[in-house]
Length: 393
Image (cartoon, rainbow, N blue to C red):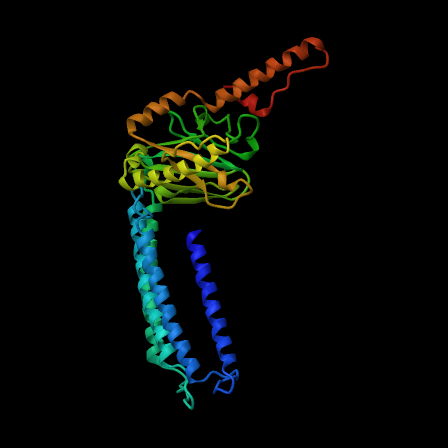
């Protein structure tokens, strides 16, 4: 906000100076004042120097941004095997953009001054220059080709999963719906059961086919746990609209498309505890908590509860504007050590979807029992297809 106010003040000051210049010209009665709409040599010279002034402004602003914002950990906090490669591609692209921007802006403003209009001067016209056309066509073409090839190489390395990777990988389904995420684990058989939106009913909100033998040990979680050092293959589905599974610290993003199953995989390299001990992350958390402390002081003064201290967690976000509560569509990701992950699986694997459906069916029957005793001639038990599937197991 302070920066915005400073910029507004600078703009208003420039407008005021321009108006004062116009007033000064109007006060020069009888002087040799150019009151026509045609720029003279002096006007062109002034505009040329202003172009140089704007060039200095651009460079000073760029330097200031690098010094002030360069301390924030923007691309140094990746927590997946492919993260550094993606970060390198981003760094190379940004460096090239910075160099090209610096050179082209300098040339643009220099030539605008050098070839400014002068009284009686005529521009040299020529139809074309094969040499210039070749230079400014072949150089961008080569640079873009190198970037594209490097990008395709990085993308192939990230997306290609061979048979060995599949054999040792963990498969987890991420299910998107307005406005929450849910993770489905395959249980001991390490095979996810079939699923379809047509099977969505009651507590089976992921539409798992409960008649599929592979679905008998599947269980869900609203907190995504993954082990460090093991490839995780994500199967992504959406119940309603287009979502995008975005895990920024793992440099992972993939669309969740209704009616399709999309895939993404990566190998986590830092547990949640290890990332919390990262020097840059400690500084970032401290800065956030300082801001929250100041905000809490204002809230307490108004009689409202204070904000809780911030603790870093990996997050799964939605990177598509999917509706009114899109901003709140997130799920906590916990990267465990292999031992911690096994313990978590052991603790949660018994909470299967099949058992949840059976429990819901029993509760429904218990609720219907009093009504049946009052009128046994008209009230009959009626199970849904999903419940029937569950009871056959």
